[in-house]
Image 1: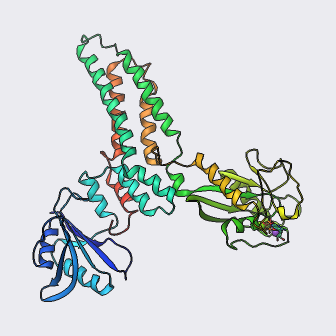
Image 2: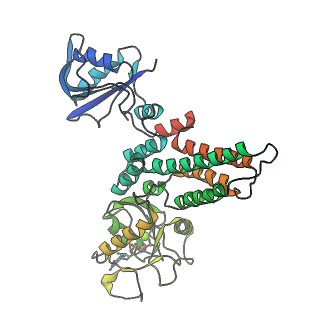
Length: 423
Ligand SMILES: Nc1nc2c(ncn2[C@@H]2O[C@H](COP(=O)(O)OP(=O)(O)OP(=O)(O)O)[C@@H](O)[C@H]2O)c(=O)[nH]1
Ligand SMILES: [K+]
Ligand SMILES: [Mg+2]
């Protein structure tokens, strides 16, 4: 029999309320033992919880019989007082029963998946949601949890099944030794599907929301990179001084600007002459960061930075007007132009990040979509229906894997390990 699992599903203790969730075949019996009777299903009831003769707490309890629950199993919830001793006492009482134990990280969600309550893409979205720190990340993850990603993939899967049916019919109706006609519609519909999936692969990746847009501040020594970096973060993270070559190491800070996740990166000033050994290493690192950057703020002489960099005129309080057409003029001292710069970055990030309106695919999911495209690649040239049927099966299986209908234990461990205990 499956273990019955329990965990604290609410936040860290002490807290106003602690929600203990129990899932599995013994959930009902445990609840009845603790609260004296099994309360009516799906209604919050106030009960005194007891372990034998010992009163543990007065709690709001919920009895949610399966399978129509989040885990697909019998479920009970105890809304206790959020003291450490109270929760510890209730947990000890629960664990005393055979076949009942504390849940592992992500185990509730894993059961929901195994019981078909959510598919794998939704579980991944949920993992992202629990770690989301910005509003945009939350909306992106909602796209998976709400099932818009799964719906899109389901649509492709249905098309593949229909194509398979057409090919199977062609095989059935042809003569034994003359199996070489594939309906023209199969090739054309296959090409349309393949193009659609290709377009989806070209959307911004789901990971981009988690990792943030990388903005690198670059330019010669003393251009004011570290000063601007500090001003944008509103903190003194980087050392600023009048000495050229102050910054050596790369300094990076994640920051949410208007709900959009960014990583700001301060780098060593670029120069070839008079740089000592340590500074030289810093310059190499700066150049590597510029390669990786999504957006480069160029604080050096106009036109001397990378082609797609944003020309920034710094120290605008000094009224030097050294650039003819700067994208932004800013002063780290007075804060002039700073808001405009941040606004401009948010606008630029829009094109680089998933919008939340269209599904975004993560690396694992993109791998599956690539396999579908590979299966469709030589479709038009294959005139053996048996081969085409095989390719279609392969494509369908790739989508099944995407949705988790064919998943390995190893992959599940990796995914559900990302969750915290109690989820
Ligand atoms: N007036 C004025 N001075 C600034 C401004 N920003 C930076 N400075 C000054 O310019 C000098 C260099 O600033 P940093 O921020 O250290 O320049 P950096 O580009 O990081 O220099 P390195 O790390 O050495 O490459 C310091 O003396 C700053 O006080 C500004 O907006 N206005
Ligand atoms: K400096
Ligand atoms: Mg610096």
